[in-house]
Image 1: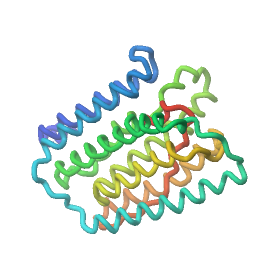
Image 2: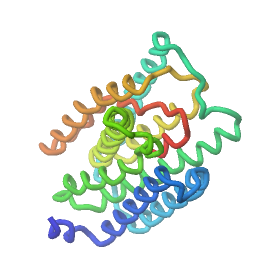
Image 3: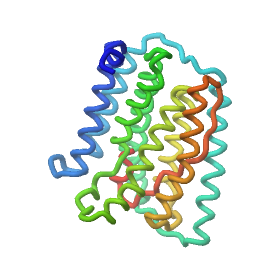
Image 4: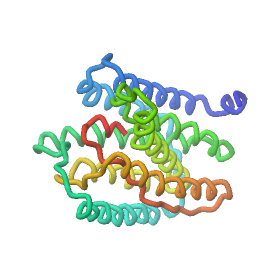
Length: 268
């Protein structure tokens, strides 16, 4: 395994190390008081994400994306996401609606765009570049490593201290950890077969759905988590099969990223 890792280009290994650092700082900042939460969300995390993206831009050089029909695939992702949003919003007729705590004044929306949207863009650009740099023979196993590392950055560790028993830990896994892993693997799959535009449509679309609507359906943790897992696992399994068999296709099932009630949930 180490031989495979050292066969990766040094620039890709350095970029992966930057991603590991970003994810580690995110986990530490959310689960401890080492870094004040507002400082981390509005300063430290954006600075680290943008710095990682700038380094990715430098190592990319003039490399061309190998994915074909990128516009069509981005349109497919956007169409599925739009349909999912309509169904998600209409589900509030059964679960009732609640005020979105992330939506307040225009200033608050702009701050959320900076702390969530810019960070998401920078991370997905870095994900796209690192998968572009890696050779095709290493793309599957290295993509799994990248997806696992960036999944940690998407997880919400702020409630980890409250998981005092098995039930609380299962709740945390279903509502946060497992959906973050599935989302990260899907984004990495899109980086391989869908192109940067498809990644952005999916990731920024979920950010917009989370921080812009003034009201959102009221979902409890069980409904959120189970829905994510039931939709995400078949999509991830089929996506892995497509990559393994070398077929050029994008099958995207809308993975509903849990609607957060606090800004820390959207570190993803």
